[in-house]
Length: 411
Length: 224
Ligand SMILES: Nc1ncnc2c1ncn2[C@@H]1O[C@H](COP(=O)(O)OP(=O)(O)OP(=O)(O)O)[C@@H](O)[C@H]1O
Ligand SMILES: [Mg+2]
Image (tube, rainbow over the protein chains, first blue to last red):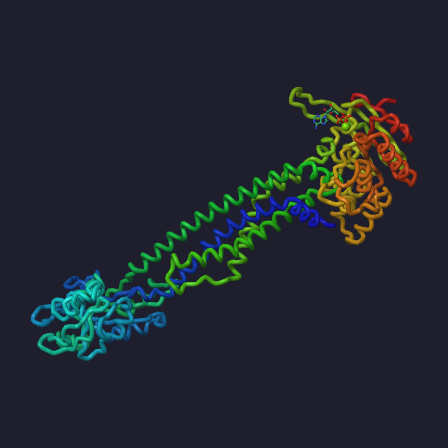
């Protein structure tokens, strides 16, 4: 028989209370574990999908003459500026120290050209990089290859009468397709070519409505636009997407700025930021909930231990009288708390893990996962043991100060 | 010099009503020889239990000294005094104070729990103590499965398991009927015959007569 034998016997004697206490701790720790798991899964998801939200850096020429507006970013008037962007700038961007973090560099030349007899906004793009950047684009038709292929924004296509209204073509029987067409999923091409500045181009596809500036644009291979506008090798904007988990966007911006002193380099993160903000809010909320839950748990442990000590006043006095040191009383009670806390911690960790996995689909996109991590398990243990021990310090010290003489007198 | 010696021990309890406090023991001096069986008698409230807890190294006197085996007991720091109790003293409480969730042999073993000693040796010692009080056959019973007299004997087994030089008992027969009380007294006499020093508080004159010596206390002072 040792001190621990007595502690365990005491737990067995009051199984109900021990189970209640362990359950309380488990709920607290489980909440913390579930929230932590969700948080880290969402952060992970944001990190790995950063480039899905489009460019996060935009490079434009340095100039006061604002002529065009692209995606909310004003682009300098191309004609008056001495410091134009050029193809060389693309190479310079690709040589910055952080080049491995650059996933896509998409150059563009914007200009106004005659499309089927009307002036339209034409964007010269490198289709391969552009399509990698704009993953949310839904293209009806085939992806443009370059050369004489063009891609029409929804409004531009309508203006050029390049798309048919589905209900007219297929009749009323094909219900729902008009609705689809409006969402840009099954647009029917009405013709397969159009004239830009007098030259014939193939319509590869039409963009579904995005609600953005793309809707009004005609996308043509950048070489063609440079030739049509007579601006060989000129660029009006370069969009850059950097892969970033714990992204040092500011550092990448600084490096590009250093490589292109004549350009204006800025980080745009609205899309990401909105989502990051949501996760930050969830984090803060989690922290508060976790703190409250743990505080309640601590309070519960405190009152339970306090009751337990008061209930055992006489017993503890007897133990002290027959030669137990204060230290022995403290050790025995702490062993009780530790056993219950460890059980609660383990239970809470398992429960929290399960709960977070069940809840994950409501917060994250499919594919996000919460793994079993030893770190989180250790953390759960530390939290439960820490909460258990800290909140029973006072009751335990109080128990150790009980006067053995009182136990003898209470006869 | 006797094995246990009290040197003008006084005890004064704080009291909310009088600022001076209540004096419970006044200049008590006396000794107990090794192997002696001493009974302490006195009216209720005269300070018997107080004196016993002072002898029990758990109630610091307001003044005076207690020497046991030449150790100045109240000169020891608190934790060392707990060790002293474990090593020198055995207690038999009036209400026995057995742990209801431990069986007989575990209850008897309780004073050995904090000691560094193999668990087999602890168990053997506890069995030996149970044998000495005649409970060898009931070692696995819980206290509530024992009769009042058997509970008293179990309390004595727990008190002697550490072979204490001094056995202290506060009205050990107080809650028992005459026959079982006598039973306990015979056990004390037998232990004493084998050399156990015993100091016992009692209200029962017949029990007190069985001791070698009777100390009488009245209003906190020993009578001669
Ligand atoms: N902790 C305490 N604080 C204040 N007064 C106390 C305390 N303990 C005992 N007393 C008082 O000291 C006096 C002696 O008490 P004690 O318990 O020693 O008497 P006793 O002789 O054992 O009595 P009984 O025969 O009834 O057990 C009593 O008047 C009691 O009220
Ligand atoms: Mg008394």
